[in-house]
Image (cartoon, rainbow, N blue to C red):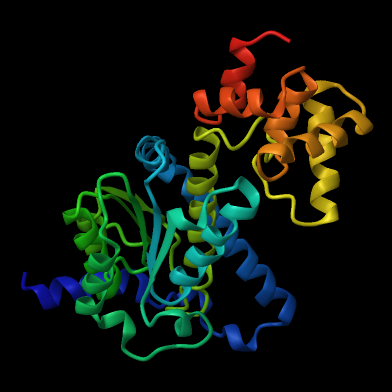
Length: 310
């Protein structure tokens, strides 16, 4: 089979029109909405088969990012790019992930986040140039997302990143797409045909969002940014979050809110207010002592609490 025929076959998997949706424009609105919802639920349920691949991706990505230099890089065009930006930008306020350890490789650049940039997703050369400019190493992790699994920009960027030694994770809704071959770890999401044929912002977009949630959350948990389901490395940027931080310190230590608030203030002696450090301060350590022992355990509060007695 020649490349053109193979490419056409691949694309049909996400571009197919499903007879189930014939006459959709004439349906009562309630039936239309119920069908869209049920189709999304079906796509989400099918994600169970992707859990082993996502598990492997989380474990390997966590190992690469466990040091102080590795970056998390999101690659995509159109809806996948926007979903990647949405996922990645939340990691700093939620988990304290440094923005210096994150990058976005987007077909069409920042402009494409707000409007369609014609032809950008077909520019494989531009993708390779943008990946080369990042000077990736084996410490970096790249997540490339494409519903069809054939987007030239995304596939080329993934290939170039893998060539540079970065861990590459490919997410697509096409089991036969070329992104699967380009990535070291392929995550196939069986999202099915779209109610509006080819509109992969729907089923495919929903499962991409969930897969990205699973990946980034799993990585952050493995890296020690979560304790008992609490975002203990969050940035305290407003009153709501400061109150949440107080409640977290109380929950972990059993102290009252006054003591928790005081410990959070003391934690600022060595930087920004921090829940993990405040917990150790409540336990009797100074801010400097707490910071040193957290650094010695790579920021894992769970590890620290297993090794010291208050």
